[in-house]
Image 1 (tube, one colour):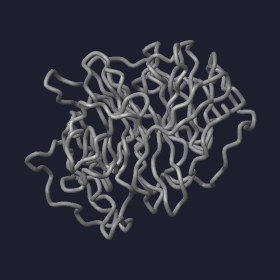
Image 2: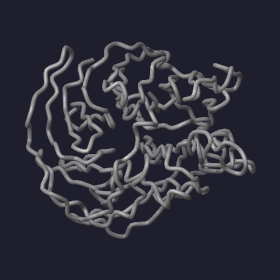
Image 3: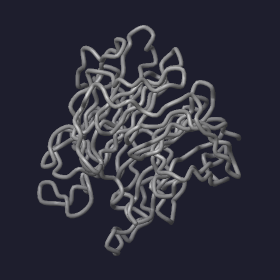
Length: 377
């Protein structure tokens, strides 16, 4: 089974501002597992993708069909927040990640990633807007991929703030064979420094380019690029204690990766990989190359990583196909050891630490859930 084969929506809904009354309550269910006690906080979310917290403890949750939802005091507001841009809700596309500005209390800025365009031509975009009650105002696109792609795969789209207040944007490579661009497989754009596909970009909070980006002064490179050589990052997190940036990345058939990201580095895709084509052959004979960074961990089975949380010397990675969360211990040198597998029983789309230091989980389903459990070191 491939990670990509399970990523489609059954239909392409629009972007209504009011949706059906959900089934939601503060804590509706507790599921005991060997490792943890999972609390179900909210149900009735349609393919949720990302979550973020407001200063008052309320939560924003994206639904891939194109809705931004508010959870207050453990209850899902039946209304969707207005002002979300139209999205391409097809394949792996839709409304994707959400973060709020580190100084949200002063500026009210919310950031969204989403798929923009049509099935024949689409790209990842980042929008910034002001949250005013149940409406987004003054929305503006501050970043986008500059090339349209002709399929609805590999948008990437995770966001994360660095300690200096700049924003990282993960962008997928554009898709699997036979998806092509300019006469070659589109995934080769991950090694093209003039393309934003298959990269992590770094921008200021208004979308402008920091002057200390690693490739900012090179003529043969897009100045927004921070790292390159990625297939499809759907887990991105910054350790608040160390400043380390971690990413979990989909392989094709096997070969999913956990990477420690450093500015200016090349992570190899598709020239270096442990994964195979979905139809069998090797993608590359090379597992490592000089000048390219090896992953910290490789899943030999298809884990399909999505969502990532880091802190207190631990990394927590969600898995779509595995329907588990994998907990890793990080040593002083940045090496990782898999400590335990926590069964969730549903596709795990996002994993993040809340302000209460509980671990929050979104499950990807037509009736997705928001879960919570105490993350033990």
